[in-house]
Amino acid sequence: MQAASDAVFSQAAAPASVPATLSPAWGAAAYAAIGRIAPAPYVIAMLATAALDRDDLPLAQSYALRLPESVVRTELLGRVAQARGDEAQASLYFVAANDVFAIRREVNRLALRDPVSAYALQSRLTSRLEQTATHPDALADAYWELGRLATQRGYADRAHRRAWFEKGMQDYLEAVKLAPLAERYLIAAGSQELNLNRPARAYVFFKRTIDGNPASGDAYAGLGVSAFRLGDVASAREYERLSRSYDPHSHFLHTLHALLQ
Image 1 (cartoon, rainbow, N blue to C red):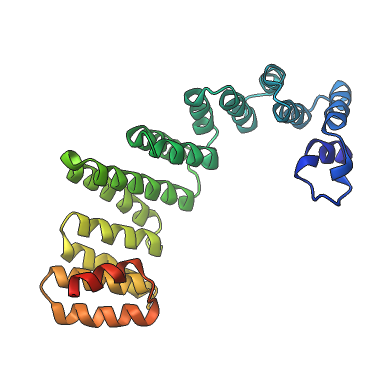
Image 2: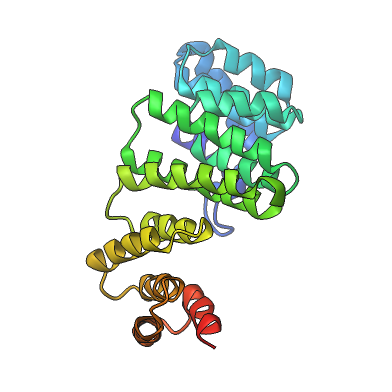
């Protein structure tokens, strides 16, 4: 069985290794023989994977359908649908399987040409993760991704910009609620409050970031931008100095420096 597995995945093996010398076809044949003796689910799943690797989609689907209801079965059916070019069906399978990485790839692809659909797909995944009580870190990251997509849409859609920014803000707040010490989510929330022209609220999020990481160049720069928007130029200059001392390449620092100039 180990040799058969090595053969199935031989194309991913290091060039000088023993598995690289094995034939994927031999591995599939070996698993087919094993399947006739002991048709365990993991054997059937491996046969479906081998069929997918050689683009035999009807066989891959037939093997996947023989599996009991499970994440593995759903994910394999999603891969078959994706290989056939049916991205909509593939996305439904991947959401059902909680396949975060597959959905992220599809979301990134959609975001380039259809950001509204990208947001809707990410929203379905987030709801699914919430229903299945997945790890809070994964759910927080899903909400952060929603916020990022909404913000991106806001920049592109001037007529509905504020509505998209508000939507993104709510998503960032959910991420902060789930991971209240995560710098990335606090910075995102503070930045969005600035997008919404609420510098006093932004200041609170950047200050919380500093409380957790006193060496955050982005957070000091965010405090500086917030202070500048509130009319406190002297504090903004001091925050610029602190930000530069910790991270002279901070994205926020460039924004703050431009304001002070």
